[in-house]
Amino acid sequence: QVQLVESGGGLVQPGGSLRLSCAASGRLFSINVMGWYRQAPGKQRELVATITDGFITNYADSVKGRFTISRDSAKNTLYLQMNSLKPEDTAVYFCYRFQGALGYWGQGTQVTVSS
Image (cartoon, rainbow, N blue to C red; front, side, top):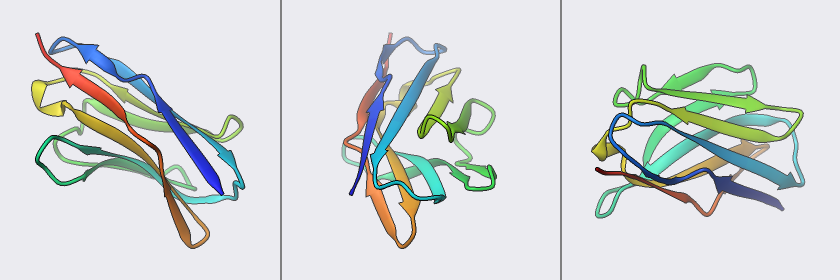
């Protein structure tokens, strides 16, 4: 079993920054891909950013140039640096880890962008 615990969410003003973290524990193997997804009220969960085992990154068009995904393999931790935040970034952010043939989700962390 794999556990993913997100942290770093909160309330921030438009234009501000937050850094999300996702700590992984349990039966960890080499990843295929890890990523961040988000879900706003009344909307479907959507991809924010992913990073592969080879550190290749991919971003949703809506966050390109503002968000940066990274990971620390030694700490089994995934990060999402979010800059220039907008009200439309408000959502619950979920960490995702795909290893072997299974995928795992964290419980989510709330990000609210509001003045």
